Length: 296
Image 1: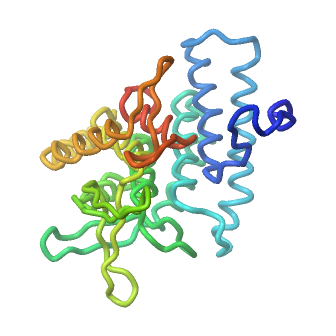
Image 2: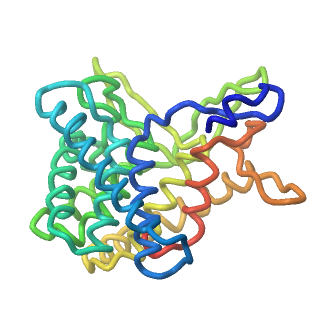
């Protein structure tokens, strides 16, 4: 990082900013530890212990700086951020079986469930949408919603005393086929994709869409996590929504394909089919949405 920061700006395009999805970094440390602890990759001596120490330190910091602040009424948590922290705690619990991670997981899920907002559609019935923020940014975005459901799918096998499957079921019912208006390249276009409809303040209709491919990537990860979950209740849930998924999944895959560019040394998944570049969220999240991994 020091070398990169000292390089001249014309040397290569770079973004040295800190991610606001703090859970992504925590989950990366947890995933690294889990892979090394399972003997799935060769690594220098001590790297597994170092990764575990980083995950533990960050989980402790998140609890002290964000969870405690949330319960004091502060605006410290948003749903996509805490979703990845939940995934980190579930990964550590799966890898070690240590009780501290189960306690972390239960406490984190308790906070995330506060973000669910009841939705009602006169034709499709009851559903639930996960707000981006509880104390600000009170809107439902597909990326935050899908990340929340993905995290709950990871947590469900470890917390059978909570009715997590019911929350996921309501969240799945919130998805709809939508047509959004997209501004790009100096013109306005329509895009047919997956989205969520809701009623906003004052009874006004609100619409969020998954036009950006990082939304699609997180949603595809959710669909696969339900299908491959060790929890029988989530298998049944996936089967119950199978008819709708048979329409929604190919739509998202086609959307990703339209935004994919092949290069001599690899494939670039752009932020959307109107975008000229990728970003640090789109590329990994879409790849994980298409390539199965036992801990994702």
